Length: 72
Image: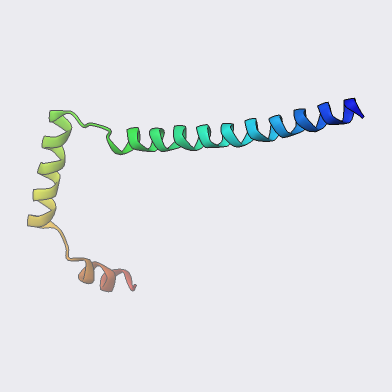
């Protein structure tokens, strides 16, 4: 009977450890997602994005017109 109590305690401890590991994994994933969201762009990349944005606004085709041309 003493062995079954020890096994029960060990199983309970394993379940608690699994739960804690799941919580830690969840927190690590949140941190990783946060890092991805905070990814920085260089000044050069930012300037290129701004240039492309302005070019698109100036020369781009409106979405509704593009959809008609594509038959969407």
